Image 1 (tube, rainbow, N blue to C red):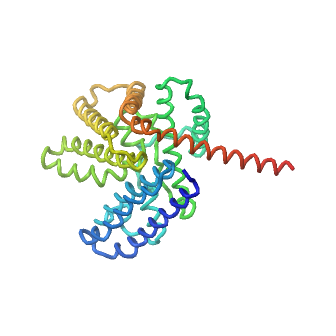
Image 2 (cartoon, rainbow, N blue to C red):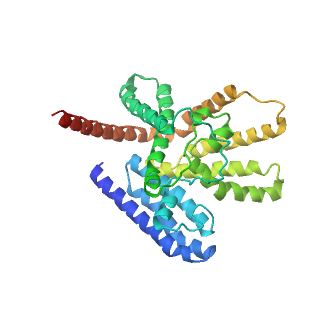
Amino acid sequence: MDMDMELKSFIKVWVLAITCLCYCYYVAARLPKGTLRLLSILPVIYIFIVLPTNLTSPNLCGPTAFFLAWLANFKLLLFSFDQAPLSPLPPKLFHFISLACLPIQLKQKTHNHTNRSPHFMPRSLLLAIKTFVLVLLFHIYSYRQFMHPYVILVLYCLHVYLHVELVLAISAVPARALFGFEIEPQFNEPYLATSLQDFWGRRWNLMVTSILRPTVYYPVHQFSKRLFGPTWASLPAVIATFWVSGLMHEVIYFYLTRVSPTWEVTWFFILHGICVAIEVVLKKVVKDRWQLHRAISGPLAVTFAGVTAFWLFFPQITRNRVDEQVIWECSILLNFIKHKVSSCFYCLML
């Protein structure tokens, strides 16, 4: 793979994406909400679906597909009907572009922080430690031939978490630095989850949670209330939300592998949706009469997520050697940075 050509393609993709968002801001936003605005935005949604196919590097294609084909498209669908986060229309174009295509959610002044775990150290220090651990992982991968496959899969679980969190955190830096946005954290220490419901709803990749709630969960919940009543309406809404998440992950896997879907990752999310729904039912039934201690329920939830990831989440990635390409590209980047740092240090010593 020619990285120079890949970087040029990456720049072209994002120039076209920003151009499309300018059209949405200046043209589509002037149309009345509803069907007419939706029809005007459909070509942009199609373009955002196609754009990631111009990239082959998983480290460039993966985030681009997530930002455009998933987050931006879902936000534009909400925008068609005058719903947040793009409505009401931001006062400046670049605010609109940032909110549309970056994995950010603005902090609300009245936001309830009761569900957020207090950080036991400054967030910047925590991110620095996670960066160090991720770099250490790339060095450990050099000895993969001596490791048991299950050990490698455990490392991949840690790698995915650290890699995704750091990529999302770095992507949010321009909006925070240029516009002074106060942004909600994209992750909330998922290893501290007390249950599957806590893991998926309040800790893991909160950008996905924030976009799936208004686009899938709330509409299905409203419809289910008429069929099943308010008590159990959340169950089909939960399962539908996980199903859509699985389908969108399947789309991103296609961008990364360019092979036909095997639907394993979709079943991973459907399985977790069913388990979260069962957890919701059990909590309603037992209420406060009986409850597992978080020291037990937390590790059980995280372990279940890891074991099912070995079974259904990673096979499409490892089978098509996307993991090896990611490691190879990151190793090249680390070697480049190491070389530049060494050169700068050498110049300072002269």
